[in-house]
Amino acid sequence: MSTPARPGPFHVLVLGSGVAGLSAAVRLAGPAHDGVAAPSLGVLTKGALSQSATRWAQGGVAAVLGGDEDSTDLHLADTLAAGAGLCDEEAVRILVDEGPGRVHELITLGVEFDREATGLLALAREGGHSRPRVVHAGGAATGAEVERALVDATYRTASAVLEGWFALDLVIEGGRCVGVSALPPHGPVVEVRADHVVLATGGAGQLFSVTTNPPESTGDGVAMALRAGVSTADVEFVQFHPTALHHPAMPRPLLSEALRGHGALLRDGAGQQFVDELAPRDVVSRAMAARMAEQGTDHLWLDATGLERFPQRFPTIAASLSSIGLDPETDWLPIAPAAHHLSGGVVTDLWGATALPGLWAIGEVACTGVHGANRLASNSLLEGMVFGARLAERIASSHHEPEASGALRAVLGGVPLNGIGCTTLADAPRRWAAGSGTASDIAKLRDSLQRAMTGGAGVVRSAASLDAAAEGVADVVAALGDRTASVAAGELGNLVQLADALLASARTRTETRGAHARSDHPATDAAWRRRLVHGGLPVDGAPVDGGPAR
Image (cartoon, rainbow, N blue to C red):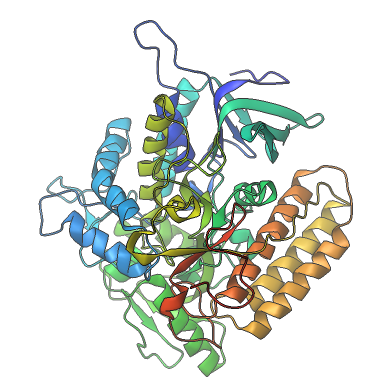
C-alpha cells in the first residue's frame, strides 16, 4: 500500500492502531457492497500498525458466553462494584450485553482463544469477577493474538495506512473537527483532513517511571483534546496493576491476573498473605503499597509454586521469567504495582461521539462511563471491541451529532444517571512543546517528569505529594522552551499537558475512590460522586475552588 505525500481527505480517519481503532476500522472500511466501494478510510499511527498497547495485553476478554451459572447481570454488577459509584450503568449494560457477540466475531476473524480438552473455551477468573468469564489466548498473549487478526484485516481493507505519522493537533473549523495536523516520517507538518476523526490513541502509562505500557503510550489523544477544549474527565483515576514483575525491564513484564485466578498467592516480606488476591485492582494495589511502606521494601512476592503445569498453561509468562532466571514452579516472583490503565479520557456518548462534532473517541483514550473510578480486569479489550463496533455503526448512519447519553450525558446538560453529577474545573494550562533539543535532553526531561509523577501522584497521594509533583512538572515545562517539531518532544509535551490535568483533578478530589487514593482523605465521600471535567461548558456553575458543587 503506497502513501501519498499529502494523504486524504478521508471520510473517516482513525488515529491509533489498537483493538478499539482497528475494530472500528475493519467495519468502516469493509469490502465493496453491490459494486459500491466503502467510504475512504485512513488509519494513522505513529509506529507500525501492529505496534500498539493491545499487543502487550496479557489479560483476556471478559464476556458471558453462556453454558454455565454466569450471567450478564453478574458481569454488570461486578463492573459497577469495581467502578466505585462512577460507572454509567447504561454504558456498562451495553458492554456486557454486546460483548459476547464481539468475542464470537473475533473467533470468526481468526482469533484462536485457549480451549479445554473438551473443545470448550477455557474460562479464567480474575480480580473483581464473581465467576470465571475471561477468555485468553496463548495463556497470557491475548492482546498479541487479537492484534494480529485485526492488523491483517485492516491491511486488506483500509484505503491508506499511515505508519510512522505523528498526530500533533486537531484541526477545527466552524466548530467542527475536520482533520489533524501531523508530522510524517519525512518532511514538514501537513494537514490530514477527514469528515470524521476517531481518537483511538490509547492510554498514558508513560506519565510514570514504572509502567506496564509501551513507550508509545503518551496520552496523545487526551492531550490534543485538552488543547482543543474538548470535554475530558476522570483522568485522576489511573489504575496501577498490582502484579507487575519487579525488574529493571521497561515496560514492566506483567504477571497476568489469571495467575491469581488459578490460585497464585500474594505474600509480604515475611511470607504472609495480607489481602484477598481476587479483590479489584485498586484494593490490591493500595494494600501492597501500605505493606511495602510498613516493611520498608520496594517489592512483595507472588507465589505461583502451587499452580500445576505452569509452562503449558502460561507459556508466554514462563518464557519471560526463564529469560531472567526465574522458575515459577520453585521461585516466588518479585512484584510491585505499575501504572497500567487510564480509566478516564475524552468524554463520549454511548456511540463514541465527543462534545465536538466530527470528533469521536474509543478505547482507553475515551471516557465512556464504563470504568468509573476503577476498571474491572479484562474489560478493556472488551470495551474497545464493543464501542469500536458501535462507533462504526453510528458513522455509517445519518446521525452524527453527539447526544446526551453515557458519560457525555451530564456534560451536555442531561439528567444525571444514578445521581452522578458533573463539575467543570478551570482549564488546565494549554502547553505545547512542539519540538526538541537533543534526543538526550528530551529523554532526561521525560525521565524527570515520570519520576515526579510516580513520587507524587502514584498509588497513594496527598496534598503535599501532589504539590511536589506539580513543582516537578513545572521544572520540566521551564526547561522545554520553544523548539522545532519532533516526535519525542511532541510526546513529552502531551505528557506535560495530561500531567497538568491529572494533578488538577487529583488535588480537587478530596476523597479516596477507586484508583484515586488520598492518604489525607482516606474515606469515600458521597458528595464527590461526580465527574471532574476539563474543557467544555460549565454545567453546574463556576469552576470549583476546593469543594464539590452541590
